[in-house]
Image (cartoon, rainbow, N blue to C red; front, side, top):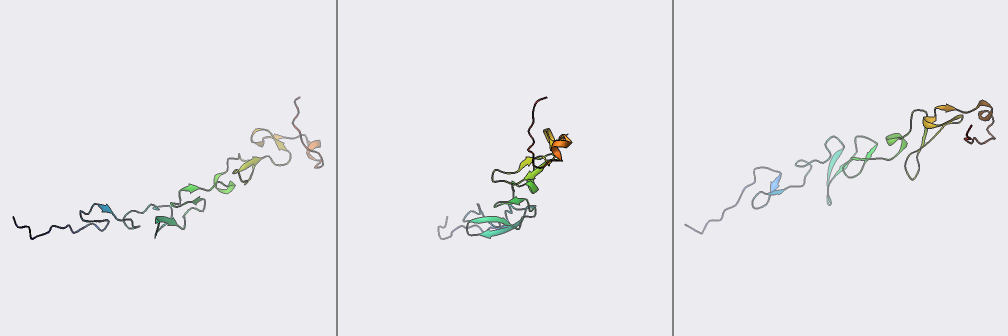
Length: 122
């Protein structure tokens, strides 16, 4: 056996490199974490997504859902959703109360905006 020759691999797959072609290349071409969510961008810190296709998504891979009324409202049809630091909050419109704001308030109370409505047992 002749020791004058050295063996080396030539990687035929552009997504692998290294002496034995066993190291995966971090590139948008080889491993796109953004498929269907945004545009893949190669940065110094790695792959990230830009221009999320859904305006309600955010995060490095455009897969985190924004916690806002527009994107993630927990409110029923007749409830009013308001964004707060703790996330979306639901409230009833004027003259309505109860679960899902389905109960109409007594019209004499409702017609006087100077009064505050209080639920009292009957």
